[in-house]
Amino acid sequence: MGFAAPENYGFAQTDQRSDIYALGVVLNCLLTGQIPGSQAEMPPVTAIQPWNQIIAQATALDPDQRYQNATEMLAALPTAVGQDNNDTIASPYVVVRFWLKIRQPVLWTLWVIYGIFCVVAFSMGFDKPSVVARFGYWLYSFMILGAPVVSHQFNRWASQQWSAKLWHRYRWWLRISESIVIFVLLGSLNPYSS
Image (cartoon, rainbow, N blue to C red; front, side):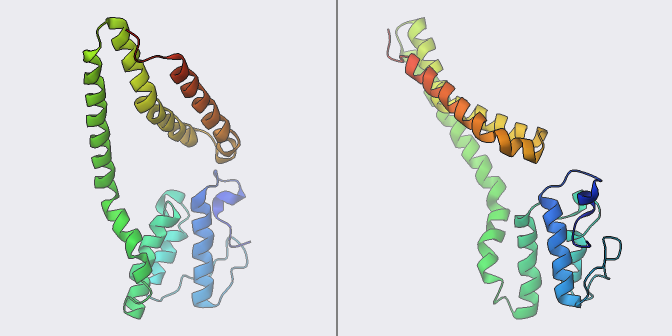
């Protein structure tokens, strides 16, 4: 009692943000020396700067106001630790902070490269002598280049639509079935037919 997030008591679905809440309570206990008696009796947040801001965000009652995952909270910690210890402890986290800054441009660059590669593969199909051969080549290219991306996007969508328990139960069956479908289709297609 006292360490569990409000959603653990049936107010909402639990997820990684519930663990962030519990970690925030543990950090607060370490800094204040006070253990919460129950969920309603959390001791006051420490006054130590900047830990109080990190703990306040981690223990927000609304899960949307908390850190959304451990990586996001980890990125906030080096700033707090570095201010107290002249960046000696913060140095291992530089890579994580750097990745969080460049992640979006890197992903966009990879998508652009993937798009160019798909256009080149599609245009190579025009070299085939017949319509049937072109269609076979394009279908084969889609199975190699497009189907894994489409199935990955479907899995991401399904993981957001299903509960975490249901997703973890069926995700490997989805992965196995989509791999079987892709391999069967690849085996049945002959891209070099005329």
